[in-house]
Image (tube, rainbow, N blue to C red; front, side, top):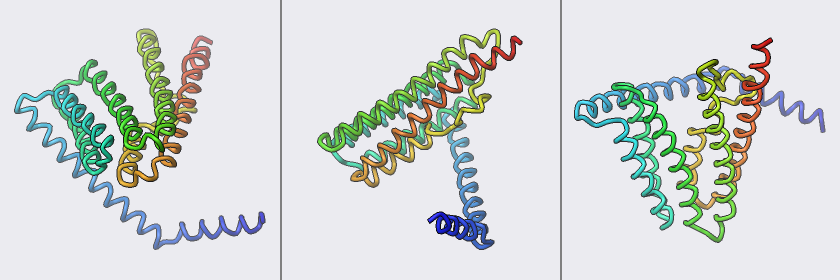
Length: 238
């Protein structure tokens, strides 16, 4: 059994290391990067035009949030196409408000507003999926909301302590070797919500996977906090 497993792993490595596959991966990566670059350029140009019209980043954040709330209504009606459109528009506004803030001035209130509305938006989507099919989705949606809240609370609690200590020593969560970076944050959640709109009948497995990722994220933040707030500070004093 062990030899068979080793041979399977070896075969997979040989296939993934083939020049043809490497070329396909490289081409796909270049295409993806070009799409990202063009999208960022387009968002930046749109932000400039909005700035000329006197529209602020906070206005865009609020507009995007209102559009996002409409997704909850559409989810409750099982209109997943309309919900998906609202989700995509919300994320577009999220990209626009950041670009617009960089063209003007990034403020602490703007950062607070953007983060708060994002958390409420994603929590609202989970609630919307529960309303779509309460009999089948309610329990799993509650689990996902529990996991999502755990991750959010860990991040926000870390931010509070880090901000409090910033006067005497700047503490960055990324300095911890135990922190998982952007793992289980906006991008994974965004992709998960899109998949749930496209294949809503797979809500249970996707929600469970997202929930587990959120719990892993919460644990990584707790361990990182102990490293930065206890071990790192102790080493600095010594």
